[in-house]
Length: 60
Image (cartoon, rainbow, N blue to C red; front, side):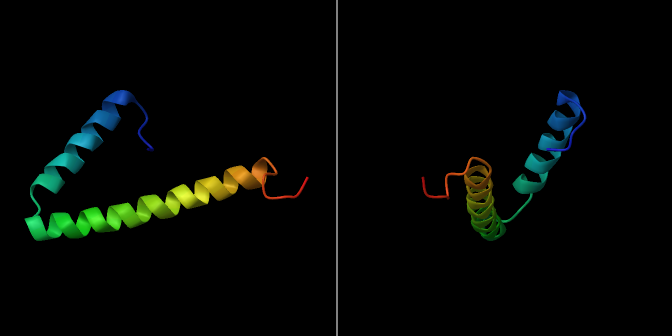
């Protein structure tokens, strides 16, 4: 997300893949559950911000 270039982003992604691959199956399950919770929360936040900016929450 904060990578300065596509090349840096690729390096970061590979590091994350390597770390994930080193996790036990139990840890992968926990990681995936936590990631899903995080992504749901971030999606809700972005949706709320978008609606606020575009006035979709206010009555016509």
